Image 1 (cartoon, each protein chain N blue to C red):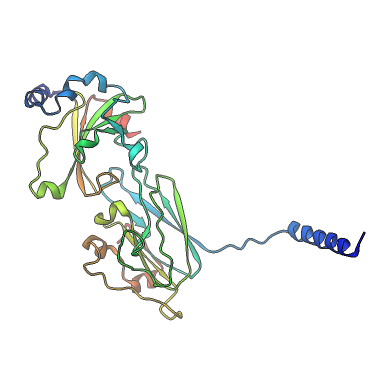
Image 2 (image 1 turned 90 degrees about the vertical axis):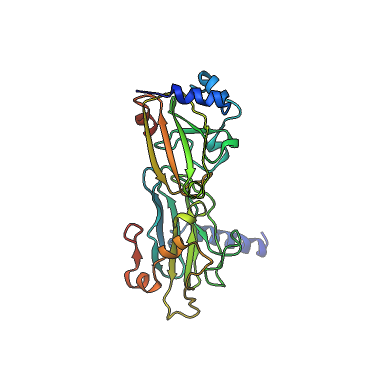
Length: 175
Length: 139
């Protein structure tokens, strides 16, 4: 057996040993946001509607509404030419339609304020706001006051950034 | 029990959706056939919507419908109309709409904030075709 072959076997053995070691999960924090609605669809909302998270947190959107489909869609020109209401360096996301019980995950890493909405329910005011990090964080991008770029129902529903930071989460029902 | 014979007669007389009145027997069991399409086949909605059941619609009649609502056994249980509030306020009227069956045991009208297919806030007008229909469509 040549030296190089013995070294290769030794390396392979070491690799196998390393792979067999117990692996510590690299768990990133996960927060759940549910899409909810009343039984007859009179009201629909994200719960919570406002949430403060640390950079790198994964958001899991779950459709908990048994009678309707929903999306979680970032306000961004890449999504149906909607206004950008997430940090410029952040990646926009669009869950697509989620049927009851379906879920979608996105990880937010860039500090700042992220506004998002549900495509079929935007005009019913189904929207939410995520604050990633704090205004003291480097590169934090604050919110832009809603103007004519948003339906009035959405502008009325988005909680103030200060309130989200102070309370951590604002449930949809107590908006 | 309310009999909508007069309503049905008016529909036939007006020649609007008369085919629905004449083909009532064909609509009693799902699937109702062309031109009706199952809503969940063409829109991202559950196959069975609690409260409305499995819906079929003739796309040409959107948004108002009628939508035919079938229970889990495929029995026609209700006819549903969806009328956008803003359109009504702007003066649109929805006249001469068809009906899935002429026998109606009860009517519910309620607000809906929107869903794929009829995104605008609208009213659901639900005509139940037998006394037990509401329960069957609920579950």
